[in-house]
Image (cartoon, rainbow, N blue to C red; front, top):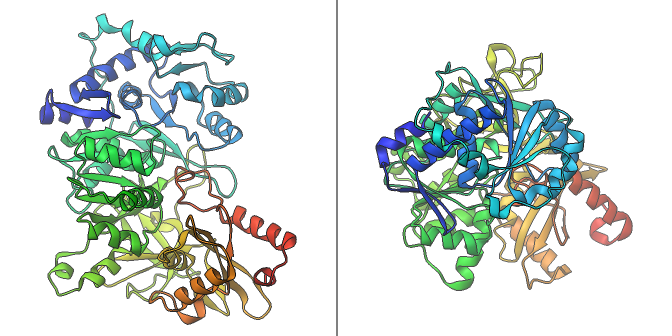
Length: 549
């Protein structure tokens, strides 16, 4: 277990911080993970069983992770942002035996449990004082702290079992935007290999002298591997719980001396808005990692103007999840690239790491040149890439063990990959491909645009044309003047070709998001829901700018 290394790296110093009240050492976490394993064993959990968690980033959730995995069981992180019906389907498909949950999710559990016959009961991640008097669930509802207290006398004699490195230990389901969600099973080996990549200087560069604010939820894409990598090297870890608004994120960064953090773009947009509104600076923050969606140029510039390096990375649940690293190479930094050119390079999704091969192919499967201009379907392979989805007979890979990511991308001569779109979202207008991602990033650079999404709408001549759907910033009037100004801004943007400029802008109060780990953080836009919303508005309000829909 990577946490073993942390005992030698930081011994008794404060290592894990939750908010401003819960502070513990890795030795504390080590002992309490053992108590958790003992308690689960007492409840009948055995090697290979699946135990689910339904929780935010907290110390108790970390203890549960290591306790479950350490005894040889599988930790299945459930995403509370999904619907109750979807969570129940995932729990049943994963064959979960117990659910370890934050008490705040009791109302959700009340909806889920009647649909989950395999779940024996619930363990609430709380103490006796905060246990509900009568839990509204139809299974045993146990107190986490009471279970651990009952195992204290057995702690000294407990030894972790010897496990084969290929033992399954983690289960995470993809968003399931088409059909049912798909489960990805991680092993101790794949998690360790991924943690080795994550701590590298060109990745998160974690060490015993760094302090990481783990914004990315533990239930999203294996927490980007941070929950394994940080303890592995004794990195101080700050856990935010559910509090991810700009004010709270800034407070945690300053209160705990955070040097690096990782999360999706909207977290950083909210943080920037708070910093700009109050004229604040960062005292120790040196770098942020942006993943989950493309990073807008304006965000990169705003952070780097404040002395914070931006690292853009790409990955997916099926890759454990890190696939590429966004830092420039030495030859590019020292080779005379201007500041603007380096920032442009950071807009790319980066170059593959040592455990990830990468290529692009055309529709027939023929490999395309890495010349920066050829665009094709992005495929990856490697020892931390999924080969078969959980409980599925068919391989998830094609010949040569290549996994099709569903992205459309280009790769340049230095190996930098740039995603132009998801295969299902790319717009084809008059035979030319138009990247919705590039248009969305450009629109976000407008001073009065808060959120942006681009979809293709039918056109009698060009088959499809791009429509920009935007949420104005507070105080900006969503009128025709703003519409013309945004279109003019797009037309003059250096990253937007003339034929790719959207035909129109539709202003809305909110953009719908999918229910992945990025949902309420405003990162993964539900294009299906967006198209339905636009179609409905076009029928209700047949204005001039909707006549093309």
